[in-house]
Image (cartoon, rainbow, N blue to C red):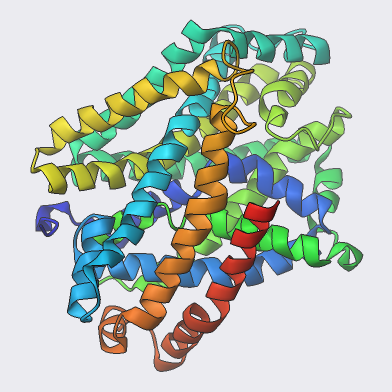
Length: 449
């Protein structure tokens, strides 16, 4: 069942906002700047860019290409392109892996987005006045212990996502991202400028942009490969379904290049939003996920205009979280529409409702079920391991093999007609000979590690 013409993006700008919104999530906003600072600053950024353009971008191009060629949800698109290339329909299982990864990630991710919305509510209503390190830690522990509260805010995030999906591609996703993504960019720039005048900016720029090539070893390179692969959002089905809505007139190569550049720019800009406050107030830049929910509230309490800053910051994070959730849900929703022949509004309700139900074990894993283990790990850790360490690198590897070896060169050349001969030849070389070995290393490292 092909995607209806009405489901195509109305412009390249709308597609780019959707794709960047999907790629830019909570993880790479706080994680990328920290990893860059710990692994040589600007030296790591250079290695990361090589990996982003040499590994993640070729897979991104492949996903968009297969999605547009197949004009369907990931499993059906893979099957259609495989049949055209006289290959087995069993390639559809690779698309199915992407859907499973997206669905599993969404179950855990929805809870984290719920935390962000909850903290946005706290920022608006009470702010973080007089919050010190002990209070911030206690407040975050109280959030994780409050099952009903977490469920409410998780459902709030899913409801927003569901309404966007429910409304359709043009009236829902497109309308949302063309407003939300420019808003996020403006908030990032405004917050970075604010930090320039309030202290800690020079320490943050030194942390991020001072090159230290002595820190670039095998571990740093592997960290760059992994960050590039996961940051761009490939092998999760979202980019493939967004590609199926892409008109033939829009160049996939140029669009993929813009997505990678903007995604990286947002991650670096986020570093100039988060770390000046961290360094200025003598806080720990290595706080990980707790950086957002435990470390930064302390900075908000101490800085002038802290409540306004905190509201804008958590608004920006909320936008990043919701737009990523939209891409994760949309690929599963499109498959539901195709597989069972149901209207979009019904499939949207079913998919979002099922995620809501399965998010309950994720919520309970932070409190009542914290000691319940599956093979030595709790529910969230098991979901995270299977999706991020198994499904994503394996799915990316198989997408690369499919695009480089199974799909005919005539079909790929037709879809990538907007690329020059040299650019196309370079992509084909990378997708066949460079990307697969790199993803094998990531996969083996994830399994062994």
